[in-house]
Each structure stands twice: as structure tokens, then as C-alpha cells.
Image (tube, helix red, strand yellow):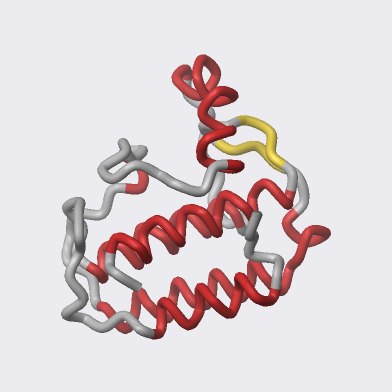
Length: 149
């Protein structure tokens, strides 16, 4: 299973992001490419420990079951529900969001398992650093596929 701590997976994600351009078209969903980059950067803020979210009731009830799909699975469904905290609906600047996302990915990769550590996910519950790395790769992969990258 690929994860963002692995050099090969890290380089793959960077290359795929670099292949995007402001006119990249989505194959499903509602976000444009700049909004998608912002959405992914916001998720990595949580993975990097910059942003902490409270665990809600749905996470307590269903998080453990869904963790297997999103952390250990590789195929997300198109149009899966998104936590409202991560919905991006306003206009974003492509280059700014691309650079912000690349910075977060680089920080995550450089921190490694020791730097990321084990911490709570607002939906899935307690996660190890490796689980954060797998979830982050899977999430990025899903959205890069959304834009054909």
C-alpha cells in the first residue's frame, strides 16, 4: 500500500500535481481544480497537525468501519460525501493553492513517521503515522484521478 512517507509515492504525487494547469477539467464532482488543491491542502493541514478538528458523533458511530475503506482501501467512490469543514466553494487562485499543497506534502514527507506521530482523526479515530500517510496518499490519489492527473 502506497503512502506519502515512501519516496516513490511522494515523487509520483508531486509529478501528478505538477501536470495540472488552471484549465484542468474535473471528471466528476463540483470543485474546480484550484478548489480541489485547496481542499487537499486543508486535509494535509490536519495530517501535519496544524489544524485539529473535534470528533463528531458520526465518527464515533461509523469511523472505525469506514477507516478500513479510506485508509486501507485504494478506490474511493466518485462523489463520496465530504466533511462540510473541507468543502471549498469560493474562488481560489490556482498557483497559490498548488504551491500551498506542495508545501504541505513536502512537510509531511520530510517529517516522516516520527514527526507525524499518532493522533486522533476527527472521523476515523486514533491513527498511527503510517495510517495518516496511507490516508493522505489515497485522498490525493482520488482527487488527482478526478482531474485526470
